[in-house]
Image (cartoon, rainbow, N blue to C red; front, side, top):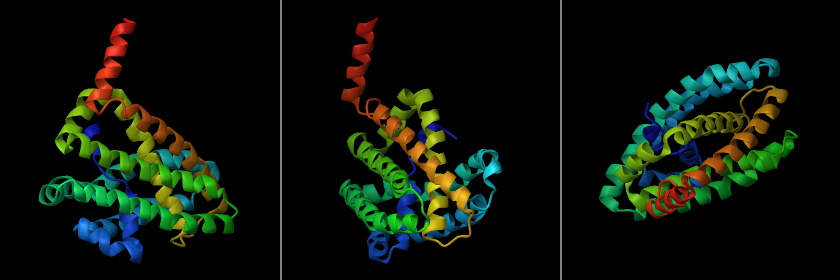
Length: 242
């Protein structure tokens, strides 16, 4: 699947917000396909995340790597209709203001989830800062995606990713969906009550912190590749270097 298509998908954090009563109604007004995506995400969680939580720590790395590709494809298949509807039909009908509204809802979602995650992490003697960092990176990705679409349009965003991102985009996808796999699994254990091995969950939290740093670094790089002004400035600087 093309990198541009993969990176035009919102993170599962938006759909997780559909499970919060305070935000669900407002999200459904923006995202008519939200309920279908929520059900799809539950199937992905049952198929990939809950089994991951029960893998022995010594086998976790090999199991995670073997399941990451099918997880990625299933998550994309779940989120793609929602993302396509958001960036085409909804925006065409209501304009970019709907994306600005969604950005604010994402921030509210993080504000609602943060204390819940911190409390649940502390109860299980986990690094609460690492848990929050992983979630924050997923939210930052959504905010970046929305900002880019607002700045250059949806089709412009796809075109620029295809033309400019190249290997950087391919590498970014790997870290991004690894982060999604980890945070969905952590969410399943901390807020969903899923059975889990304590040592395995602790490792996943550590991985989440690592993937979060990688994702944030790639977002910093892509900020110079998608907007035309920044890209042209970087290109000119590189030409001057010879």
